[in-house]
Amino acid sequence: MDGQIRPARHSCLYRLGQCLLATVLLLLGLSRFGTACPVLDLINLFAAPLGLASLILAAVLSRRAVSWTGRGVLALCCLPALGLSWPDPAQGPECSPSSARLRIAWLNTHKPKDPDRIAAWLDAEAPQVVGVAELPKYLPLHGWLEKRYPYWQSCLENGRCATALFTNIEPAAMQALTHGDPFNRQSLPAVRMVLPARAPDGGTGRGQGLQIFAVHLSRPVPPGRQAKELLQLDKALTAPAGTVIVGDFNLSPRMRLLGDYALRNGMSLTRTDRPTWPLTFQGRRYPGFWQIDHLLVGSDWKVEAIRTSPDVGSDHRGFVADLCRVD
Image (cartoon, rainbow, N blue to C red):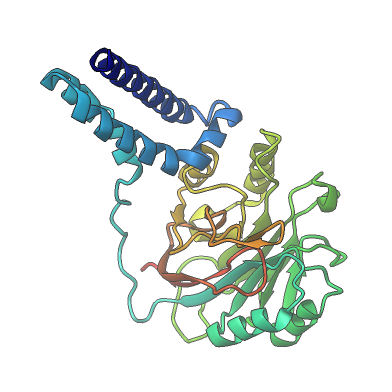
């Protein structure tokens, strides 16, 4: 009797594994239609664990497959997961020693209770431009930034907006891009600066000055709101090639909405060395699971280096990037 039950049990487990693999592959397939349907784009938040699950299931099932045809089909089932880890395209042209260069930092401060840790990180990195989110003007860190970076602009003309850009380079122009109530997500929190074409270190640039944007998008739920906010940003994006965008996009790099936005504007999306969120959730510490804070760079500029911050007390990691203008 036991000899009959064991094969039946193995057969049931094998079929269960097949059903699980089919479900995972279906989800990965549906995620490719995230551009047309924002709900399906949410699947891309979990693309990496789904891809890993498909590889594990295919490996386990291949050991139980009774024919080489079955093993071949299971090998093909690994392709969607392998496509997730495909290397990024080759880097563009190199910058010359005389190229304009800039160091820029970004951090969603999350209303910091220990601003000294953030200040120490920024002092050590010494960026020329700092973008922040969730930093109201009344907090001490805002005053500290104003002293070190005398030129600043928030996303509202009255300065009462928690998304802002700070710089120690005199800008050619500054503009608050929010028209409405950013606190209740009725308008995209966004700010724009234009820095002069000549770099502060004496390097020369070509064309117009560098446009820098700082943004803070809504969360992906309810679906559709982020797409509308990116359309608002498009209206201000007059010269994508000479533009750098930093911000909390609340989108992972695998999500179609973010990738399509970068593609249609001819901008490159930069991966950080570690996830940027969450470091804390409901009082618990985490290593971070997603990169939702991003740097987008136009074709006139190149990212020479990017590094994430240590834990500075926010629920986000920040990053610092070294940029150069492509000759």
